[in-house]
Length: 448
Image (cartoon, rainbow, N blue to C red; front, side, top):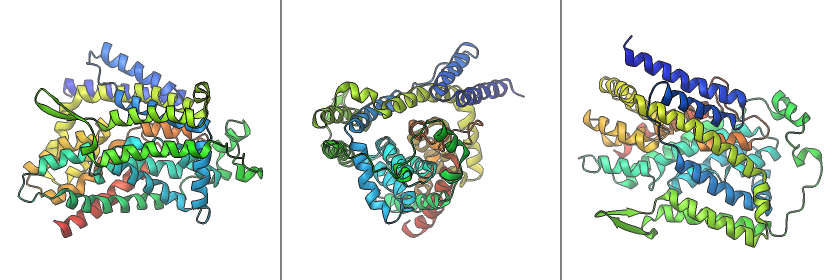
């Protein structure tokens, strides 16, 4: 075996070992073991440390601060009450509504990060209805991964338009979205159907029953027969303030002309969506504190703050470990995918999925595999149909939304399995991506 291949296999074992031990330890242990993995790769294998996922960490911090302020003011209870009224007539609708709303929110805003404020509400509504939260959380997180393929304003879509715009068979942005959006919607519905009866119902789930017996999770109010706590008087205005903040991000994301821009070294730079989201959410947190008459200390005591901090530490260690491994072995891994795609062009969709999985970046997947597809003479409509494969970002449990969903789900149903890849999000992601790409290919035949 070639020396560099042996080194890569040993490094991969460090990554898998770090995640395995982190899952066994639980909570912030995931992040701490990830950081130990980085230490081993840097000092033992002399690899350069990869990028710290600072953008994702700061987004979680900002969104969780705003959501915790809203929780302290009773705003989450208010949103859950509203959502429940909608769903009560069709309790199973949450299985379909949660991921569809997530898909549309993320596609409108051009970022999967907009899912963070939705997660606590999805969890609470599912739990109150006695529905296993894993079913709705897993499909919603998977939907946030494919959503950027259906977004006219995402960085990944901008990269695709830029790469294919001067081809003879180039598509307009509207035509690309006409392929990807319906494809993603059908994919999301297929995954929701797949998870409809997934896992044991809460009444039969030994892990949940054990947590319930130990008092780690409160029984749903619908089961205890108690009247729900009356809503705090400021709950509604606090929730509305929060939703206005989310809406501002979605609108500014969709209409980039509204964003400030600057000329730096002769190039125009527009305010990034990540920076926008952080600024708006921190401002929303302050507004909610005043409108909801919440003490700043109560924000830190809100249950969501603890969940968010745990997710941040987990993300710091695990994503940093994955980034270090990929940066060190990019030529071998990406080069291998490129060679296969040359002999089987359809493999480009698999390539997009795998690059997204390894880099946890939709843009990296587009920038790596689409130029290869163009050089192989694959048509632009067909390449557009492959875009939902960027949902592969959810393959490894190294994303903020996955780690946050696991932390928020107090029933213990949403989890990262001890074998690393057997986590709650993998199968819904695969179902969603496969169905979306197949539907996309059929639409491409019509539109292209």
